[in-house]
Length: 348
Ligand code: UDP
Image (cartoon, rainbow, N blue to C red; front, side, top):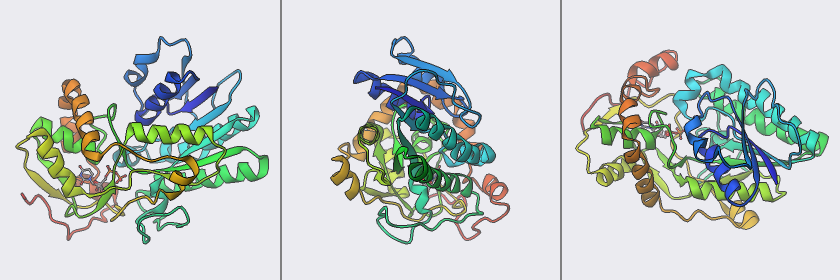
């Protein structure tokens, strides 16, 4: 198969390129490198079945020749990134998704959308099943990502109904692993980088909020299964093992042996309180199950961070200073709408 991957130089995208190349597919990676990195795809640039096109998908996707499938992953995905690039994030989810759908339509190709657990917002149903419509604040700071992805699902369904495009919607939950940017501001990367740099571990809120973390290899198997199927979805892809954020901090401290202290910062506006996928659909319809335990995945991720110590050290300022959840950043980004009841800078 010849598969176009938008956002192919990003964290997830580059792992997807690698998995598809490994099984013999031809891969066209399209990325504007706004959050993706050439270093992520550098290992396979010499593969004759791989090509890279630097392009902004919101303008168009200049791919010529046969296309069997389009996987649309292009978007900022970490909260600090989409807060830094709100208009670009909205454009990637809306105009970018339409470009990718047009490409799939014109080639009669399978189209898979990387949607997100953010569809469920701060969920009132737990664990989240695909039937749940969500609880999203359409005007809050996270809405640039959440609503763009909700629009992306809507326009994908409209192309399926109107133009008979073979659409598959995946709702991807928190995923982690090698090639994440140490300074991307997400919780796994920040905690590992802070532990290695001897910086305080920054917990937003009281740390009781939960996420369910899926190792990247598991997630990519799910995306590949979705590409190969004709299932329209939506299908949740994620690891259903739920962890509190303060629990994650402790696991990272234990794993690294770091002496870093723990600092509490205000919870960002609309930060989801609980998140855990119901993966019955993925299990029954795709035959998919995550297999890598969070602690094992964290160890593999730590090893990668240790191999990239300079990048981790260079990210220290970004992690310490410009965080979305940091008090100053939160007050700017949330328009002053900060949770003043959250503990600030209390040592644990
Ligand atoms: N978080 C945290 N400290 C950090 C970064 C994130 O406590 O340095 C929290 C964040 O508030 C959220 C959770 O960790 O509750 C997951 O955040 P992340 O940005 O990784 O992804 P999200 O699931 O919110 O998109």
